[in-house]
Image (cartoon, rainbow, N blue to C red; front, side, top):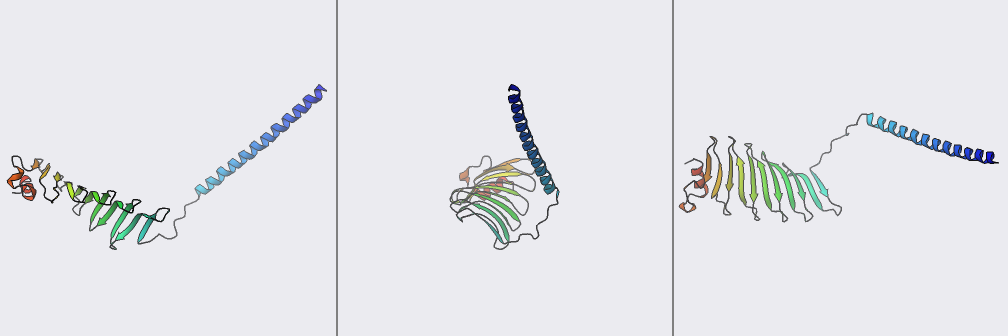
Length: 197
C-alpha cells in the first residue's frame, strides 16, 4: 500500500512538472515570436510622409479650447512662435522681422520685461524693461567685439553706462570727473565718454 501511495505521489509530481514545462515552453515561444516580430517591424524602412503639412498658422489649445501657443506669420511676412499663459497673455515669443531676430519674455500682464535681439548688423542686444515696458538696461556688443552696458532713465535718457572701446580702453558714463548736473548726461555725455567729441 505504501508503494502504491508513493507511485501516486510521484505520478502527481510528474504531471505538475510536465504542466509547468508546457507553460514555460509556451511563454518562451510567445516571447521569441514577439521579439522576432518587433525586430522585423524595426528593420523595415521608414516610409516618408506622403505630403508635407502646409499652413499659415498652427494653434496650440488646452482641453478647454483656450489658445496656449501659436506658430504663425505676423502681417503675412514675419514668422512668430508664441506661448501664452492661462489668462491668454503672451509670456514668451520668438520673432524674425526685417532681418532681425527677437525673443521676448513677458510678465503676468503680458508686458515686455526682457528682450534679446540680434540686429541686421549681427550685433547682439539684451534689454531689461520696467513694468511699463520701457527699456531701462541695455547690454550690447559692437562689430569690434567691444561690450557696453547702458542704464536708461524712465524719460529715455542714458545718464550712466560703461563699456570697452575697440582699442581696449574702458569708458564710463558720465565721464570721470563729470557730474550729472553739468548737463552732459544722456546722449552728449555718452558721446563724450565714447570719445566721439
